[in-house]
Length: 342
Ligand code: NDP
Ligand code: GDR
Image (cartoon, rainbow, N blue to C red; front, side):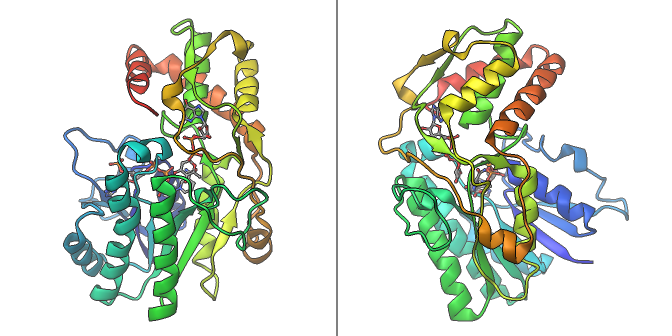
């Protein structure tokens, strides 16, 4: 039985990846941060009592800021595959918390790579790199496109990208970067633009909210479906040679078009419900990201089937359904989301 360690298992991608690896018969270990309340809602459906001999999912307290803990865990777990998905992953928030973002999203990766090296485990390593690395470089973007980061988040991810490549070359590690374009799902964090929109559509359609406040509607993103992207991550670790791969759909649409499709899905006119708030603008914006996934198609046999337009409908349907079961807690979430700058 193969054993995997996932950092960021409580996040969107971590939850889909855990599901995928468990279905493939892996024993899955996840790193979770201690919080004053439980934050495992995305993986609660995978819970099996750890005393049960059939249990295959195990969680361990730890943090990417705590290198010694990572070495201990790596030695104890002795994984065949490590997926480094943990990060402060919000671009807008990285302008508010640049140093924390550097520590988690940047230095966190070297701590984990060092934990692999110091513990001496023989493992493959996946680094969650991002299309944000391309930043100001115009589309289409592929594995050979020059990077031009435009945020503290992207600059931290740039460090992680290069240090992963360096450990591959310096220590002959099987360490790869998945350069993933935006990918979304009904489990997407509530303050990323797609989920913010689809949750607002559900709330407005139910008469619980009148408006949603947004920032720049002109940016173009290549949105794919997270459940399909974790399959691509896994495939990157199953090939003979360690290489970096782009995962994308190849279709770019504007935030405005995503809004239009989402509101239309619920029979609403977006222009009557969307207001501008400059709080959601970024000091430097990434105007357009559209990926070319040819290499992943050819070498991994990975082909996405859901693009941004389909995703908008899928996510609106899911949020309308979720709202029916949420009761009063839904309103509180919407209020909470509007407190910050995200
Ligand atoms: P999420 O924000 O949903 O999840 C981030 C995860 O990282 C959470 O489990 C979070 O834990 C954990 N985490 C944050 N800080 C720390 C820390 N200091 N120590 C340990 N764990 C920590 O991100 P996604 O699932 O969307 O993305 C997964 C990865 O892929 C991230 O690295 C992201 O930057 C990257 N990425 C994402 C893309 C996307 O479109 N989704 C595209 C390209 C790259 P907690 O639940 O406790 O907060
Ligand atoms: P992004 O995702 O920055 O691409 O990073 P996000 O959904 O936050 O923004 C996408 C675009 O929408 C514009 N926008 C708004 N964004 C938010 N969050 N809230 C708003 O109100 C709003 N109005 C307009 C943004 O300006 C931006 O242009 C995501 C993250 O998952 C990263 O971790 C990952 O690396 C990249 O995708 C690829």
